[in-house]
Amino acid sequence: MKLAPLAHTLAARGDVIHSVVHTGQHFDPEMSAAFIEDLDIPAPDENLEVGPGTHAQQTALIMQRLEPVLLARRPDVVLVYGDVNSTVAAALVAAKLGVQVGHVEAGLRSRDWSMPEEINRIVTDRLAHLLFTPSRDASENLRAEGVAANHIHFVGNVMIDTVVAALPAARRLDAPILHGVAGCPYVVVTLHRPSNVDDPGALRDLLTGLEEIAAGYPVLFPVHPRTRGRLREMDAAARGNGRLRLLEPMRYLEMLGLVTHAALVITDSGGLQEETTYLGVPCLTIRPNTERPVTCTHGTNRLVAPSGAALRAAAHEALARGQADTRPIERWDGRAAERITAVLLDGAQFD
Image (cartoon, rainbow, N blue to C red):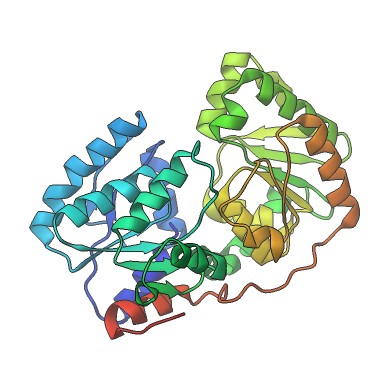
């Protein structure tokens, strides 16, 4: 999804790219097809179809299935995005075959080694020859770790490229009208991280906080498959009654349309921290840390302890304050893909 603008930008230059889809923790063919349709992503040449499994199982399967693809296609560069298991698996395969690795969204650090994503980020950055950073602090992290300056390219955030490209279509959907919340302040929620949903006591406490927020505002909660499974185990599906509305996962454009007009977003997702910062929507992130600190220092994001009481207090404060004061973050302008393309094809340097 997040590399769609880059694929289009490279294609516009007349250069041949091969889009290899190697899916992550929750492979869903219908959801994958929906993203491709919503964002007009070029159809993939290969689909590795790696579904749920342990971290080791996923990483191993992706490596096994990707290696013959790279041997057959012999690319000059393998671009990997973000911090999931497919990111580090593809980087390992490419590096061992002597193919240059370009890491899009390089340099982000939470400094929390209990997060599998932090391990994936750091290993991938060590393997990458081209490190495309989304923010100044990410470039500074890499320099502090000894990465040579000529390998670091501060290109901006490709997630924002996707938002900029998708906003007109998302607005045309009129998602608030579809969900019956147009013209009134409402809250959008996503939760999926193990630290928030795998412990029944922690999840129950957060649901209690959300119910208390819903006493004053409609709360729309598209439920991630992982979270849905935990709710079933807790026999908590009935908690979706009233103004706390447990919904099925949404297509990207519908979700973006809801977030754009929300009074508040509550999440533990990295991407939503960035989207809300760009859109000027107040965001509460239920995590003790973030690898995207720029969303807190220059954006709309605030970290909140994983407790119902802390969440309720922070939500009421944010809702009382109203629209966030947004300052544009440097190079979050919808042109990151153009800069990456200039590095790959023209030898440009962005620092």
